[in-house]
Amino acid sequence: MKPSKKLSDIPPMNDEELENFWEKNQPEDFEGWQKGTLRFTRPPKKLIQLRLDPRDVRIIDRESKRSGIDRAQLVRSWVREKISHIEKQEGHI
Image 1: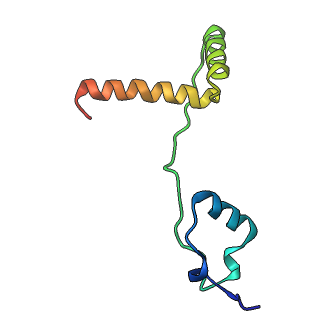
Image 2: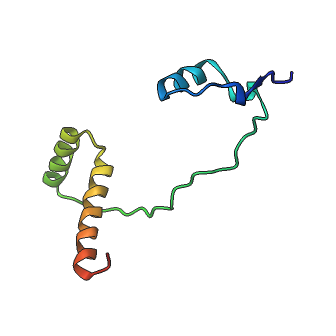
Image 3: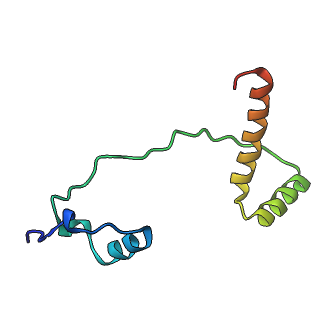
């Protein structure tokens, strides 16, 4: 089945109108549509393990619940903050 709609026939819309439009339409329904080749990839991360005192874990869990951030993400952000601080002191940034 050949697409009968043209992308050039779509009028200008604000974000909300575009969202509603694409909720009701599929890109494949439009003439000239093709899948893009753009791919998003994350840089590889390295896994480390560490042992913490139960008291420290309770504090991390409490802060995680308070802030609504996953435990691992919270610890990762704290480590990143410390690394940034060290880099600034050493003049890397």
